[in-house]
Image (cartoon, rainbow, N blue to C red; front, side):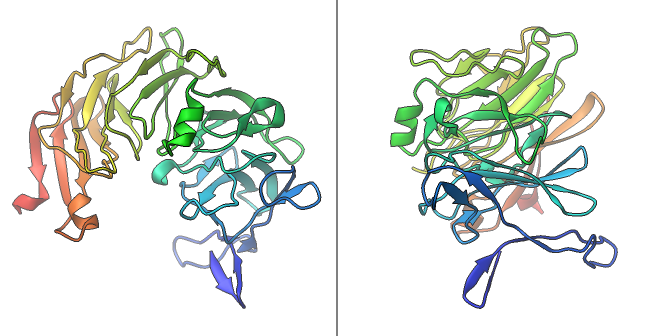
Amino acid sequence: RTKENGTFVQRLHALDVGTGAEKFGGPVLIQATVNGTGAGSLNGKVSFNPQSENQRPALLLQNGLVYIAWASLCDVDPYHGWVVAYDAQNLNQMAVWNATANGTEGGIWASGAGPAGDGSSVLFATGNGSFNVASGNYGSSVVKLGPAIAGTFAVSDYFTPFNYASLNAGDVDLGAGGVLLLDQPFGSPQHLLFLCGKEGRIYVIDRDNMGHFDTTTDHVLQSIPGANPGAWNSPASWNRTLYLGGASEQNIADRVKAYSIDPVSGMLSTPPSSQTSVTFLYPAPTPSISANGTSNGIMWVLQESTYLNNTGQAVLLAFDATNLANLLYSSSQW
């Protein structure tokens, strides 16, 4: 995003990693329009607003397409969640999708995580916003988009929590962080999705039957309320274990926790199988795993709250991935 002659613009760049030179005729100006009567619409059209839209998630490259997603700057309305795909070889725009074309908001925040691809579909979670499937509005939802067809994406499946209205009212975004996809070849179901948002509830979802919306209950594989004070991050997995940390904007600290994943049902162990000896304040860390195949697993995280609060340096920590109670390394010791 840049401001040029008093006007905000956003562009997609393809750069040669060796020289930094632009490739494929780039950069290209990002523009998009969909049919709709939602916030900021004009004459039945909703157009991408480069001033109010903020590209918070990472990019996704899948099947030759670069996927870009947006939420807002500081919740300043009007805004929408957008997904726009470009051909990675020539930067031609291939498809556009708006999460709330006939409503408002529904940003794709993800805390830096990109949309997740499974080889054919793209999955992500949206934050506060309008929800009404009949109107094509998918705020506070986990959305599965099919392949790009005729310049757009069709929603092939979705999940919306039964309590989405109260989540919206309390600014408790479902999609504050990213989703994690995991396949279990011998499981039933085989294709899983894990997510935790500001509410601190972990969802385990069957990607082949995501559950849609019910006013009284969630039709998901598993829901673990109160797993943490809230998540503005993404989980990691290794050796049939899910790693996830949480914290609260109200300075409620928590630990990064490990949950065993049942190899058949896909459900998580409760209580967690282990947790860190160190606590973390907002924002909770996004874990990363290094390992030699199925052995010597190490979970790495950043303790960044002191840096963000201008009270000290960020600290890199390493834990034994088989038992998070074992701290292996801290950069503060060196």
